[in-house]
Image (cartoon, rainbow, N blue to C red; front, side, top):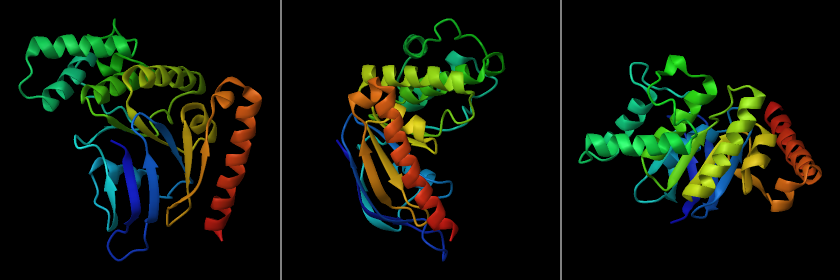
Length: 243
């Protein structure tokens, strides 16, 4: 089913609204990048979609099985191996699963993220990019149609980030997940999203959106043009907030 946000609003206590009148529809299997200035409510919106926060107004529809969540920090349990971290997620998702079944499925997921030989390594033995791959495999282990990603590659170096962009695109195409990817990086949004949604500065609401075509994906010139258009619009929002 699609993800539907209707007139969604959120405020904490008596403070000013963080989100106000957010409207968006995300189709099943679509990859949407959510872009905005720092503090515009991107993460709060993701938390609402994940069921971690409740909106104070409006309504939303998400798949009945909820959402898997991937954070900026891999947050792996240091005493467990890469495989063990994934097996734990599988156990929490399905209490009736067997130990052997969880191990087999964890190995499949490690292969999916190209870490088939790293299952016995603990987090401190893995690079930052490898830890994020384990975190992605752990998110996929929850077997939810909707995957929410909150700036998962922001702390990585540029080369590792580009490699993981390729991996994420491949996995998205293989699994058919619906992905909402929060970022403050316009280039990353254009590189990954089929659509880019821009949130205004507080209160956050969807003020612009762009379709990312196959031409943008295959032609660096067209991608650069779109990146420039979105960057200028983002700067307008930042300037508006600074006044």
